[in-house]
Amino acid sequence: ENHADAIEDAVAEGEFFQMQTFQQALIGLVCAGEVDREIAANAANNRHDFLIALEREQKRRAAAELEQEPEPDAAEEQEPAPEATLLVAPPPLEDEPPGLRIVRPAGQ
Image (cartoon, rainbow, N blue to C red; front, top):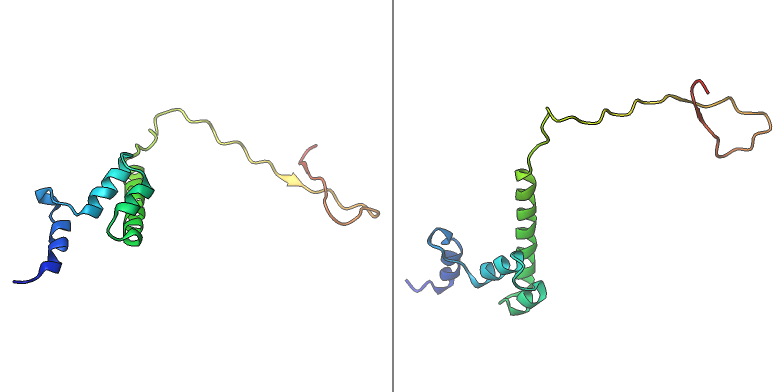
């Protein structure tokens, strides 16, 4: 129906049919480490749009990797947390200059 501008959108949404745009292909190659980011950006139809889409895809992949990391098993031995030490400041001396004071743990 003379809607040539809709072709790129249809291809971009056609992942189920293994269709992809040139930009999507470049992003996939950069993320796979097969093509350098700058070379792909220079080859893209629109450098600015490509760099934005690439950054978005890299963030999406990083988030997906974080979600897939296994949680540490609660049954595994973990180091106990260090006990908190209460620090007590000694009363100031009459001739003590203002500024940094040395604080020692209670009982010392």
